[in-house]
Amino acid sequence: MINGPVQVFRFERFNDLVIKGMIRSAPLFFYILQTFCRNMNAALQFFDYAKWWIFSKIGRKDPLVNTMIIHFACNLRCKHCSVMASGDPPALKMSYDEIVSEMESKYKEGAKIMYFEGGETTMWKDGDKNLGDLIKKSKEIGYFNTGYTTNGTNKIYTNSDVISVSIDGPREIHDEIRGEGVFDKLMNTLDELEFDGSIFANMVIQKDNLAHIEETVKLIHENPKIKGGMFNFITPPPHEISLTPEEKKEAVDLLLELKERGYPILNSKKGLKLLAQEDWTEKCPYFMTSFTVAGGFHFNGCPMQGTDACKKCGFAAPREYYLVTKGDPLTIMELSALFAMSK
Image (tube, rainbow, N blue to C red):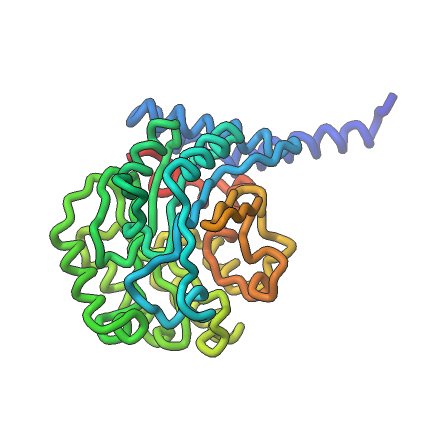
């Protein structure tokens, strides 16, 4: 039997850990309480996520996010696109039945968030089925949050919970990267859009727009249709427009300053700091995301896992996922309403 000073030390140490844990989790507790009062459905979804997190801590590594690259066709030829860096996009496309089968399978495994990507996602069709039909099916299956990425120059489907639009700078910079007239098409699309979900801008920081970060942040802030912006660094290829570690650190410092000043930067503060760290081969929580890529390719984690590109990772998502797996309460509160809950 342990007694005396050792027992007292262990008891005090245990109390210290409990108190620290309570203090650290207090903001999250009040966030849950507020969520319950505002929206019972959102609160129930939050507790479902909490169950997933607890199971992940005891060894059950189920995917939380189901990401599908449903085809590669695109109406643009962007300078930083890794697909275009290898030549014309492959003529690969998933059928409606294949996509539904994968959605059902990953949902049964535990996934609650569904994201469609491309190519230009809105161009996908299979017979009389379009992206809107995929979103509808995702909700019928039970996914809490369904979204997709778009360059904003094609038809927009408004039955999703969230839409990610690509904005890589002010007009002249955006068009230099994506093509002449693309910026105005995107802005016109947003002006005319009626959507009761959330729209966020996605910026890929590279050599061509590095000097225009603050200008882009302010542009996003001034657009009433856009909730805020997520900021990523380019993940090579192409290599010639990638940033140096020093350039990345300077960009992160600026983004942190702008976030502190109240601009709608959606990356969490801790996530931004981690964005300056390039090699995420050891830290990336691969199990959180299931990737299915047109052509019959399946990945339990990022398709770039184990490649040279992985060592130069510029994606914001792995940093935020990492913080979620660590149970960081402020990151969870910042990101959950937009990226995890139903609209």
